[in-house]
Image (tube, rainbow, N blue to C red; front, top):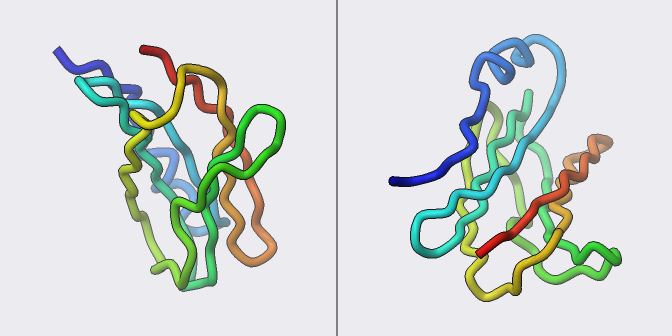
Length: 104
C-alpha cells in the first residue's frame, strides 16, 4: 500500500484571497517521489530548488513563469541518498523553505 502525506487542500483554498504559499512532501511507493504543491495569486517568475542540509544547491526542480492558482509538481528522488534535504521556492518577494526527509 502507498504511503503518502496528504496535502491539506482546504489550507490552499483559504489562501486564495490572501497570499502565495507552497508545501512539499515525500511519497514512497517503490521509487521515492517528492510531491510539491504551490498556490500563486498571479503568474510570476518562480524557482523551486533542492538543497543539501548544509545549504549546497543540488538541483533546480522548476525555473520559469509559474501559472496562477494551485499547481502540483512530482520530482523523483531515487537518485539521492537517504537524508534530510531542503526544498525552497522563490516567487517574486515570496520565499519559503521546507525540510524533506528521504528514507529508504
